[in-house]
Length: 286
Length: 240
Image 1 (cartoon, rainbow over the protein chains, first blue to last red):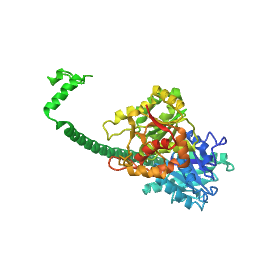
Image 2 (image 1 turned 120 degrees about the vertical axis):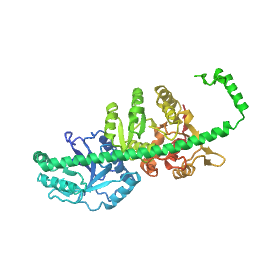
Image 3 (image 1 turned 180 degrees about the vertical axis):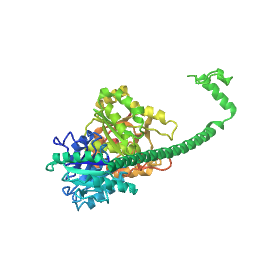
Image 4 (image 1 turned 120 degrees about the horizontal axis):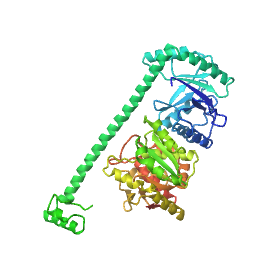
């Protein structure tokens, strides 16, 4: 989606709105691995249409949580099928109010790489002003969003060939007046959807996604082709080894010995008698 | 109850190999855990298809690291972290072995362990013999260890010995199930991976597709180590 909405929650529980149609962003508190077993199971039941990501905020207090079990419990979240990926890379939202997560992020990135998985860190911005640098992730506290400026900014970045990221809005679950704020924003979006620049941006975005999809498919095909070449080389070597083995184990024997072997096979019932005298006769019994 | 840990690399394997086989054994109500390759573009459709047939299945997606062994370790990690429970675990994957002419017939034989008739016999064996740790297809139970030289007759020799030392395994039986598809008593894995996290074990595995024909790999060494864990804990390995 060109514009993604995320509901920031601190846990999945009974109060998590069931009618929320967009993404869930889990604000990472100081969970211990043992506390997270239900979270893994809950995430499994999350529809793929509801993506999930984590947010590191000022509440996260991660400085004390750089131990391997905790970091690995985060990495396991990235393996959940609903986890939000950007070009197959998991995304972590990092609140702009945080200052002390550098060491945690470094350690997490290092451990992720050892699992064959890079991570993307998207730093949030205040929704009050539109900036055309970096990722477009906004922590929204009022409905006073300048949609036109955001979309125009996205479009100009796209036309400059900068391959801009999607736009993300983060809403705190317990923010005062959230329902009213969302309603106001929906009204603005309806107006936005009728503007020419939005329609053009939407088309450009869909084209960009299609190109990414084709690139992934092409990469997959190149990979398969490379593997097939490797397997063919190995099969070729095996065939050569087999022929050599056959030569040394059988072909090298005197003809009379091989003929005797044929007769033994007939006596053992492994070959038909007629095949001793005619190449056209059925050779082996079923 | 037993759990099936299924690693799927090729997108068409679900339809071609697993779907019908799993339907045939639904009477046993196994816990189903599936690992898919993260980078594949058709995962959403595949997940939908799996959940359509088996709504209770757990699915994860991981990068192609350590081939099926990496997938099985990631599934083990999920199983431990989500605190799932079972009596036995069955390791399965969409073995292709393109490099070997007999790959297809190998797979057919390895999959005999989930034929309904054999499942009954296997469950009975586990119930009657508390020392049974691992059960696999008899023809695939191999032993590469040379007692005289104390070496493993494989390119993986050095790495296998390294892992035995790292995990301090005390072994007197070096048999393993070649092909890495077998039944294992869940408590064996639960005990080991509660001490050594499955993800940290996965870190050392090689990335991408590779073989051990010319050079040993940690991935192929882990294929052996999985079976050695049973012996280390005093359990036996049996063929069927």
